Image (cartoon, rainbow, N blue to C red; front, side, top):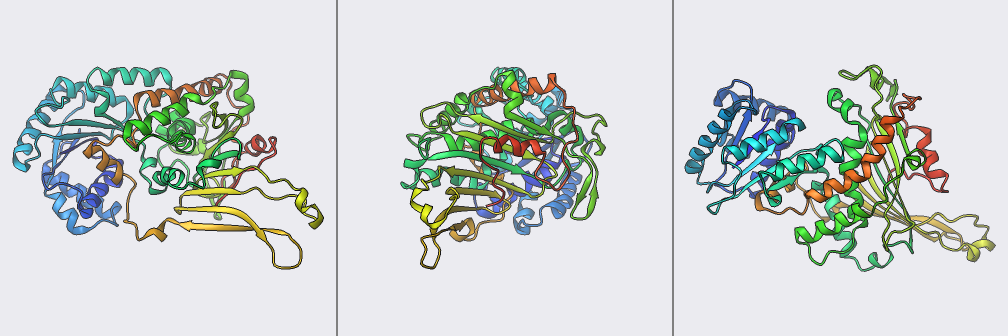
Length: 489
């Protein structure tokens, strides 16, 4: 049984219901299955099903219609306020009735697709209603969306409230980026290929770049985004998780706790920036008005539900260091922003340059370093940039790109990115979910940066035009180290 709190929101219609429908198509949903939506609006069950059907037609164009028809028959609705104990008593009775009807065995996965300020309240109400305990051979699990706190203090407090009701193994803090096939492939690519792991360290790697660039603006999410900014919305969670996949040590097994133990060690090893270092090793930006593909787009401060004097960053670039034996001295450059020139999520491993003396006679002034580029979106592929001899009498090297597209492994299923995560939560696999100590370790890195930014308001916002690579200071951040950003694969 899947219970979705906030069942009338965007996440449900755009991601959750299409994902569950896709799982049904793949044959990975049990026959003993039902979905219960919980929301405040006064709707009958028939009206709820009709609304979900209409929205699936709008947002779920890739789903199998036969699977949806079967799923719709198992779609139910409970109306109520999340702060009302009565709501949870009605839900408890409904779950008992549906468990008997569909033979679910009492198992329940609660998905909190709600604003963050409702997370603790819902969990506390589940506990008071007797819905949170795994007992009698059945399990109860809770999926919590981001953002998980606004800083270290609020994340720690939220963890404390959740743990007062739930065991850690019942809590699934979701990061939908980790549901992408190419992200999961980073671990397999690293540890299943003996040629890479011996050079995956400070002796051979010059630096690492992680980029998450978006062409779109805030797209109607101004009220949320103006309270979050790119650091809280993207970097502290998604990008730090990508960093851990790149930097982690080989786990002893692929069991959940072994993998998560190695990831948290990376987060704990990231050197926290002192106040004076924040100014030198971070850049923030906010987009102004301009043209994107010949169409005028508004400045961030002119977006709906955004303050006209907003100081919220829509772009950020960081230089971080992982201070352990493998990575000491290797900088990790992270950047993310909205209204940029391209949409891409890439991880770039740049290796050290070879000695040049051998090629001096050929008039070669500089050899581009080898790079491994893992592109997560918009295309899922991996490329290796190496050198080979140009045709002719001279031993002149030329760049060669060895390219692998993920689709070469076979036709992949159309997916939202949530399918794997929902399935893992159902079977109790926590590998791709954040643990309590991981969340707090990430905030220990991000909070000092946010504190300095809040103390020293930006004076130059807006400082980059739409359809560019972001503020010029971001290029300076990496170029003063003798490096440059790599755009695209």
